[in-house]
Image (cartoon, rainbow, N blue to C red; front, side, top):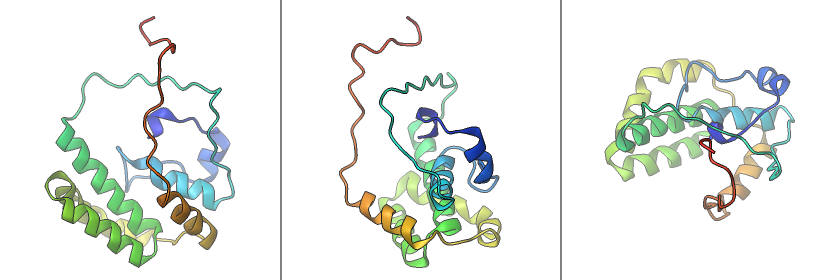
Length: 150
């Protein structure tokens, strides 16, 4: 999630930043893909600590899942090969509920996404395929890390 990441300003701007098609939440996926496509390295630096102070006004969990599925759909249309777009849409449609509603909500922004579509370079797609085979990381133990209220 972008709220737990930092990016150099010049890289952010050079890769187009966040766009008005995907929007929040989930906008960081397409940006990360574009950063990689533009030759920027994406690395985990455990010594860097990013503090995120989310708004106390939050969507309920179902609304957030819907919004993330919408962004996943539009990011896929913007950058992935059609076979991968279909796979991603199928996953979210089969999940039902908020995810299905998110895919349907993406239809309103489908035309702008298609106009801006450019498939990622083969090397980035290969890297994504490798990542897809890896276990999903669990949140790190935050014991000993000061909270924002300390």
